[in-house]
Image (tube, rainbow, N blue to C red; front, side, top):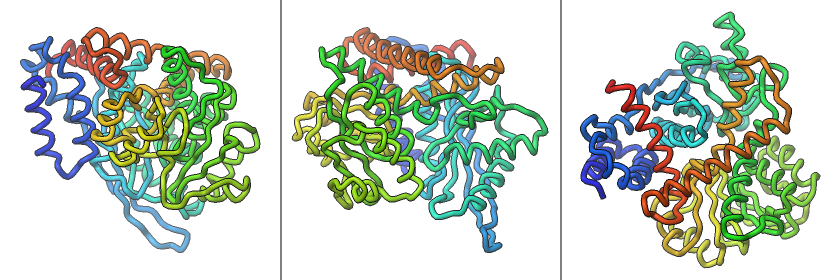
Length: 447
């Protein structure tokens, strides 16, 4: 490993030891890009790596809101504007009880390189709060969103920072935040948020985009290995928009998704969740109720409590729930199952140790920063539509999304080969995204 890379990793480990998610993703990315740093001594001269792992801006604020009983609550809010070398900061907002600065920082760091891979002019950012929306009324969520935006609005704008949704933040929450932004600013800047409703500047297929994009990326991987996606069985985790999008596109492409999961456990449907409109549509209804077991009860299939689907006999694994859901023990089960393909869809779903184990045992691994870039790709398209005051058809958006995912796969493969790493999609994606951001930073000078 390059000595400069090693020193930066050790510095991050010491400085951010209380933020393991951030340390993990920095170590994974910088280890991958060591061959690039070897060829560019100017990186060390400009201390580019230490700048690269330090957010340009980390904003924290309190969010005070009132529940339906008139009681006040105080939560923490965050926005990490990590790197704007390529364009306005772009990344989602997450509402979840476990949100803290380390998670926001790691997500924003990953987002920087993911956004670079799309080829679109967007930087990397992320935000959120430790507010837990589960069990809260619609009115409570509205008041929280309004309070959150009242603190955030001064830091964002169509040419500054454009947030979107993430875990716990969907179209409803985006609508409430946009309404508050418009109320405070007194202007119609509908390019300030993406994931909006279609009645006020949203893009078609945005809710499905991450899942659709992951399936398009998977299709490129399979084609490269002489295989057809039709007839393949897939284990998916989660049951939100991403899993729903995977199931919808799998149905159109002839693949069969056989698992979904939640905090209570997972469902195994041997006939396929993606084999009927009724089952796919039920995911939306089930999500509103918040119980994964409802699917098993309705369709009379197996429910496995307090477990995850890694180890079920399938062709492809697609973790699509949250970070670090696959550790070394789960990775061993995946290898033992005989599956050949592992496509990360949620952000950093795999520990570094598990990722290395999968690669050492000849499982073809696709990293989330490449495979799940479809969501931000369509978000950027929404920004373009807003700027031009246009509404593209579903076919236009879907066609551009497919092209973006094909290009991400292509550049990942080519970059890994350029550095003599063979077919390594993880290293290729890290190198390609990093190289683009690094060049922009160098050209813009040291600041």
